[in-house]
Image (cartoon, rainbow, N blue to C red; front, side, top):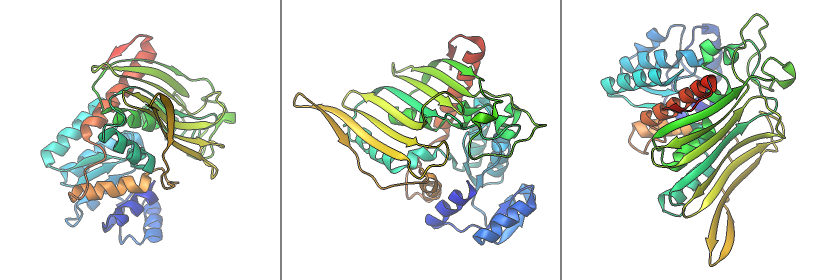
Length: 347
């Protein structure tokens, strides 16, 4: 992820002054490859540099909240990788730190920055789509477990499996819906295949036979909102599906639509198929519009990082807000609680 952040920040005109990692050798390697002048093995030392205005947080999920909070308290703007934190309570603490410091806090919900998403939001904003009554969010994989025994599969470090890892399409659906306030969540999680190496993905971390694998492999759920809108989700690393699908389908009062990417091979596929469509009724006819946008192989990752810098400078509105991140994490929390209890959970 660091390469996308670097490319995006530089695209927006930012200067990258330093990088920090507990593994200083790893940080040095990235610095050498990207002409970053200063390298630190201690985050606090880097944050003490007065010339630094903003930082990006790219670490295992458990450390998102503490490092982001540390940076905010040091007076830096923060761009944090997804998920925002392990749970909603941690996000509330991050928001409090940002407000106290008077600094911007944003998250890398990069699928909002895809050309397809910009196009769809244009139709939302001009009234073509109307109110989105319902949406279906999917990020499903057949063989996509990101290694066994690493931090991805260790709940104490990750917060969970695909439900919290692949939350992008749920976020995008809520974004198109206007991020309504959630009311209830009913969900189920499944751990079939989570220790089966036949379902390992082509990316992630090396297996650690002495590590922990205690997260779900798939989740399905349904969210109701206080506005009356509804959204279903299907999110998985390992599930008996035909192919990897990354999609949001929605039904609005003026038009419906779909943003979709289909992969032939889970996680890596140069033959991925992108679809961006609107569905309307015109003159008694069913009309399906294909929306043609530029290709974006990085799925908005570079553009998302650039937006962070441009938002700080007041040149663009931010693509996401801390309150939206909090709402999303309340849904994730409720999904896990519902799956454990077998009952609907209030957000």
